[in-house]
Image 1 (cartoon, rainbow, N blue to C red):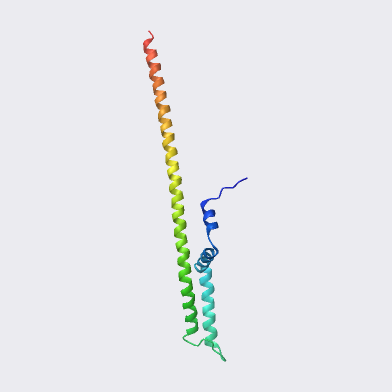
Image 2 (image 1 turned 120 degrees about the vertical axis):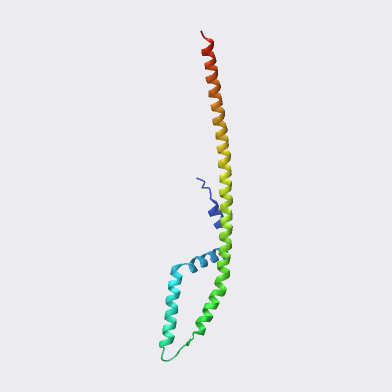
Length: 138
């Protein structure tokens, strides 16, 4: 049995490794799970550095932590933008597919309407002929 692929599957299969990776990173970074885990790590980082008695690896005002966040943002922003661009491409493809489907449906409806009108005209013609036959009979 041959299964026809829809445009979602075709689009996904056309993506390269980098595109899929960017989409995965954007999906993870845009989740509550990521925010919660990152918040826990930051609180843990700050707590350990504030209460460490022997060695502080990142003393207040946590310059290393700020550097890590800056690096994360520098890489995350373009990756998320790549994913958003692909989302725009997917939206355009979906809009085009929807337009094509609507256009085909419109043509079918017009053909059905025309057929119904011709059937209606044929019925009216038959009724008129029958009435004329009835009037001719004494």
